Image (cartoon, rainbow, N blue to C red):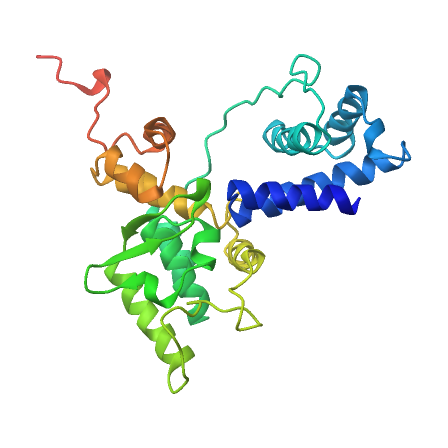
Length: 288
């Protein structure tokens, strides 16, 4: 087992795999290995049928979605091919078909109600960045003090998804909340520009992503909002509301850090058509 772990870590280091991806792969590989070890004495004995049975277990017993199961398949394939050095047969282990669902979005008034209901200034600073700048939860968690620039009104996002770097906008409102938070958190304390903007309980580490997610869940439940609303919903709202305000999808793509414009174009289906200035043919003047 130790040899396998060393090979996995070596591959991650050689490829320069982002830490967030490493954590996901480790977790899913560990779950797969635990399942397999109940059947085999050594991992070298794994065959395609074992993988098929595990996928059925994830689907039938765990009730995971096709998208999540596909993430497990990617991790297992990596382990099977790069660590065990076995040939992968995609015909025997197909990826599951996904039914594309539009993410949940909220009207701007409901987003503002979430922000107004947030009394903890640290939590409020995090939420205004999620919505005001369209950041991912993990991106907000890993922000450093130096990433915020009030002179250019932009935020630097380093080592984001797919190992990319980018800049996004800094909201005037978010800046005011950040200043309140900064005065309360760092006033009179020594700090470096490379310190975490939102440190966790251990100040040498950034805030845990789960802490941010749980904060939004508590607010959602208190305000009796849709149970599907999550911290990531605020990023979706940023994109949707920006489109409704007439921002070009290409600019939104850059701000969100999407690799493909088609990903950003999804939000076109989620905008309020009345705000986009589109009239139904039924409502057009009939000439009478």
